[in-house]
Image: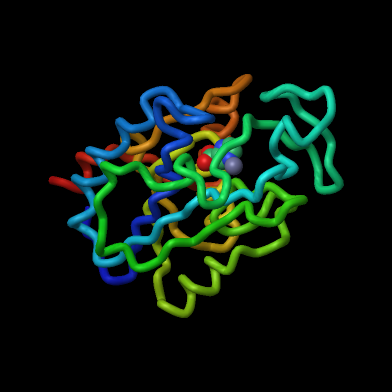
Length: 209
Ligand code: VGL
Ligand code: ZN
């Protein structure tokens, strides 16, 4: 697969709290780093997202009396899964994993900083209408095909991929450079949506050939 100057690699939330030992650890979350390092040299453009919550964020179970992590609640914008406190602004857990080394990345996009709304997707918050600004950034820079890697496959990577399709971007998820949380069928659900919306799944080897 040929990478061009209109392609961008978007590295989703490879942060300490999503890796082993972190507050919302994804199984083998750090295993995404070697394939990301393998594909990165093929791209002329790289962007990061960084989950970046204020303390007491509304997606934290601890912010809701009597609620525990992984329960769901209804918020004004829809159903929200509650998480352990994670990726709090300025904390160690919110930092990128120390082994991730991509100094050439051109953008770090922070998301989830509004106290009352969670933001899985790199493009829209969980109300599906509040933009993060990424669509405008990509459009101004004439970047129209995105390759997604990182954490978590079935939440922030998946929602970003579906929103990218909604925006008309060609969207490719590099499956072996992602790891999933897999909460009550979330992997099957996101893959059904990928098939429906035209998100392409590939293995990193496709880019290295
Ligand atoms: C994520 C749950 C909560 C993710 C972020 O990066 O997939 N998941 N916040
Ligand atoms: Zn979060």
